[in-house]
Length: 91
Image (cartoon, rainbow, N blue to C red; front, side, top):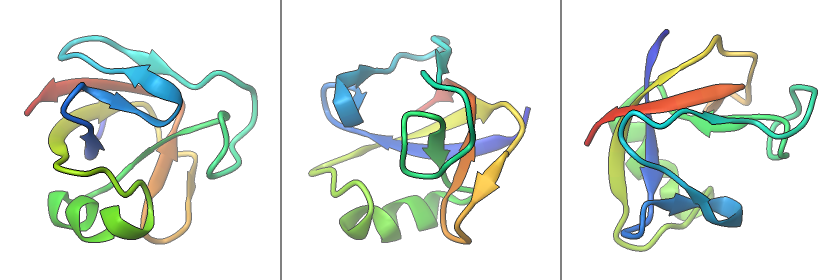
């Protein structure tokens, strides 16, 4: 599983109030691999990119940066990547 990065709110949530926790695996809800849908979960290859693109992607105020383990990358837009499963490993 590749190591990637994700931002969450201070309540450990993301879009649609998905709740994250260290060691808890989250899976995409729908079949397919279309970016910016419930078919995939987004992440970044570098913690700096996660922070840099936050204002134009998720716009999370005062985010927490997580290192995550994710399943195979199935899509990318060149800035962020998408996979089907993510498990936060550490802050």
